[in-house]
Image 1 (tube, helix red, strand yellow):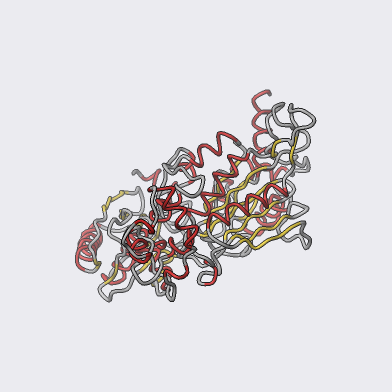
Image 2 (cartoon, rainbow, N blue to C red; image 1 turned 90 degrees about the horizontal axis):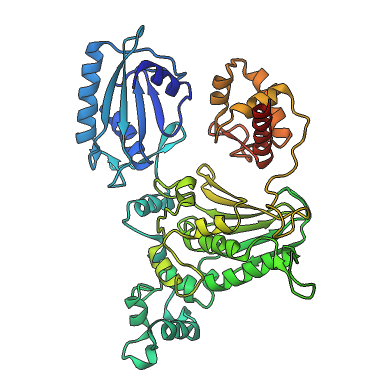
Length: 485
């Protein structure tokens, strides 16, 4: 990395992956920072840089002292030890900047000498105390999985034996009636219980009343007449409980009765096709049920709007997965026992092929990994009346409003992915925050061309901005016009 590349990184400011330090002198503080980064996907610490991103620099003596401190803290003050890499960047006017790179840890959780687990919290770090969050860290390390955690108070008596016997017969050709094993033993052999209690996989796949023990693990479905979540009216709603198979069937029924059926080129007397291909909906719905984070006590949300369908799963993508990777078939089995059995029960094929198949059948799908809200959103654009099936490409974006000010147009032209206010202002060359907010940010958001990543907390320091479907369409139109000019 040279000085020019360093400046490009610093202008983006601090976030969960990069931290600025003028100097470091305390090994315990360094250890907490190292543990937090190793537990949270890795990142970089820039030493010799002020909080505002300006370079303060270090002299040669400070560089030697800090490198020795980093080495000692990484090996002696973090358990298990971490192995950061350092690079010294010489600047023209301000001396040296040390860039310390901490890789994503393979042996999570990492702790300081006091046994405290640290994680990144935006650009800061925090001590983990919540039981569920500690479980998720152990899950990422492959030490524990939510689907095999015992469900306290449950027993084999909570199993729907008729459903379970049918499953055994279809899978192995025999049931417990033809073995000398008890039901408890069979459940334990299949990793669905521990001989006394059911685990979560056993409860959700074969329980009589799963929500008796885990009331949040259901699907909350709502159909709205318009396009906004805060609409006070709704067309249909249902709290969908039961086993995962029951939740899948009832959720699909909810979708079918609230989407349009179109004839396309089919005969007049046929029932018509669902406006969104059923296989795409099937893949996305099953993915939500199978791959959600079951350490998070929240329900899956299924929302049908006039222009789109949204499926929101608790838990953002695990580890190093991102939306681009899963578009190409990358997968991480967050609930391996559940998926191992579900492949025989639900229309689930595994192998990471669900998302690519859904996108092949219906490209108008947006995947949003919302880390701040700890959720994964799938937004499926609905078919409009202008686009019958089999005649033209589905309309995937709403009509773009033409009332766009020059300032908003400039913002749209530079907005790439998700960017913070500070990053956008830096690219635009703006320094007056009030001017930016009034003439750029507010105009872009109110016209529906840009949206906040954390809409419920507009002033959050983690807030970022991204183009909506309308914003993407507008940007594409402008590029097309520039190409013709």
